[in-house]
Every structure is written in C-alpha cells, then in structure tokens.
Image (cartoon, rainbow, N blue to C red; front, side):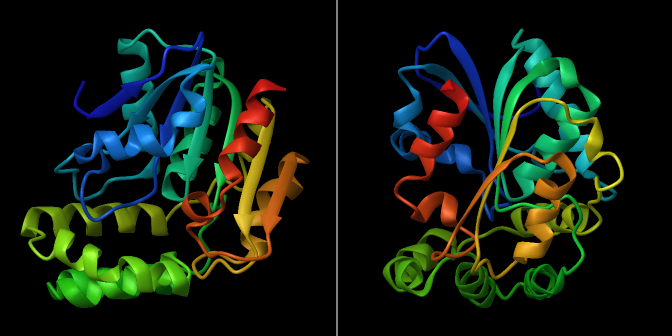
Length: 249
C-alpha cells in the first residue's frame, strides 16, 4: 500500500475517514487523530487514510479514489461506513460511484459535488508557489476556521508549519489542482447508499448552494450549522454525535 493510515478502535463495523487537504500529512499525529475520533472507537474499527506523498503532476480525484479502493481491498475491508471531509468528501463521492459495493453508508462534510468557485484555492496555490509559508498558513487558517479558533491556534500553527519543505508545498499545490477540477454532478445519481450531508452556512470556501446541491441530487439527509466556518467538522462539538447516530441508525 502506497499510503499511510491510522487504525484504532475495536468495534465490529469498519469506518473509513478521508480527511481534507492539508499542508502536511495528518498521520504524523496519530494520537491527536485517535483522541479527535474517540467517540467511534467502541462501535467501529476506524481507518483514517492519508494521501500518497509525491503525487503525479496531473493528479485527479479519481486517482485518489482508486488509491483508497486499492487500500481497502488490500486490507480486505468492505461494507464500510465512509466519512469524507472537504476534499476527502470529493474522494468519498468518487469511491462510492466507482466502487459502490464497498460502501454501506456515507457522510459528507463541508464538501461539494462540483467546484464552481475556486478563488480561495487559487490564492493558496499562488502563496505556495511563491513559497510564502507564513502567508499561506495565515490565509489557509483564516479561510478554514472561525475567527475565535484562528486567534487561538495561529501562533502554534505557525510554529508547526514554518519549516514546510519544497516537496510538501509541491504536493499541496498538486492536490489543490485536482480539487479545483472536481465535478461529480452528472454522475452523483449513481450513489445508492444512505448519505448524510453536513456543513456550515458560514463556510468561506464553499457556498450553501454548492454544498446543498448534493442534497438536491440525492434527496438525502442534511444538517447545516448556523455558526462556525468550513472546519465545522472540528469546531461543532456535537457533529461527531450526529455522524455516529446516522451510522448506527
């Protein structure tokens, strides 16, 4: 398998988490992951997959979905409870479309079926291209998190990412390009499993109309928070309980 993953929990069901785009591999902090998703560890065996390092220049979301599918086959996982966040939600959609036999239920948070406005991503791309690490970190955090969380985390985040390498910036830029070209709006009808869509009405990256398009196509369950921002998946204290209730329903 050419990708890293964190495994925890000892429940009888298999849950797979696909995270959003990040400046550095998220599996580098396994204890933080386990703590963040501890609520699932009793009922599920949880696998959080990271994205392969050194992706090809013409990477597509389809490629990432196939990478995940190959990883699931290698681990002999099926009937998974799939949770995709932001770009991970895009990968989750493609995985469910291309390999419907693998998925039992799916939750999509802060994501869309078609990226129509990628202005924020263009700014991140240009900052990464210019190697303006402090500018990139600050802008990325402001776009993703609410002001309260940004103010709390920015100094720690600066110290975490001040040494971003050229390779890490390159990988980030390639994944951004893949996300900017994403569109499942004409094939999302192929998704036949139960789906829950979650998001924030104050998301600064995707509009409510963009996120709700998934709901309109699938006629699925949804809940949009009044507050928070794009990272509602980290900020809303009850969001994981909502996901657990949906999966266990």
